[in-house]
View (cartoon, rainbow, N blue to C red):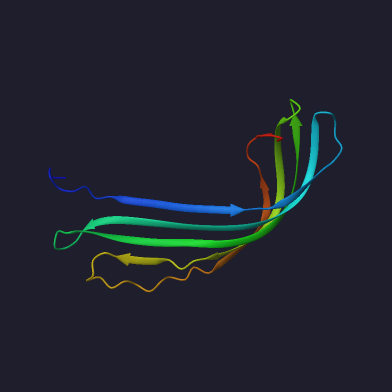
Length: 144
């Protein structure tokens, strides 16, 4: 790159949120071990955006932005255990099985250069998944 020229940039951003309210039922265990099982409903939403700069044919810096996203709903069951190493602090792990339906948002591409015709949004359809899941780490929690 020649000194004094602007640097081209690529910016990626993503936002994901999911809410999974549910219930846990703890069974009798030992003084320090608390096995449980439960069920949950899940709602999820996410968006992503990629903005790439480029040099146009007339040496201007232009950009292309591609936006995407999804909305999902699902349900699941799970089981696990918590080991209380003090009266109010525990370590735990969990396994589960669930279903999830995702509706993918259309992919939209926009150009800052007005001379380029923007394509129609690309439909992405939907997906349905069924399968197991696991908490791939040991959970640390506390009672309040």
